[in-house]
Length: 146
Image (cartoon, rainbow, N blue to C red; front, side, top):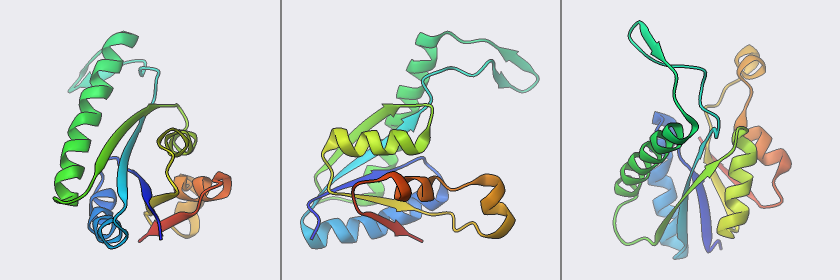
């Protein structure tokens, strides 16, 4: 059915749990998987550890984001297991949903497979839903795993 899945990953428990289902889907369809991580291109005002905060340069921020993305990709690839063609894509975009859609376009995916936090009620209003934003703006099918 699908031949190229774009799977946004962020290292969260929800993201990790979805990878088992992604692996099953990819193996069933003999599809390739592109793992996408979206990071903010602008460094925060300060990085903090304990009570001491410190500023960081744009260049150092990019290095930190790249290292974090590589770690997430490594863990996600292990969770997917062997036997799959897995690519990785690190996207810099201050809007997560836009970054995911940009990743789908760059990787030429034919479906976006996302995990959802299943927020309802006031939590969904206050915290929003990146999954919902991707669904609304995507030209591709979006498969939401719960």
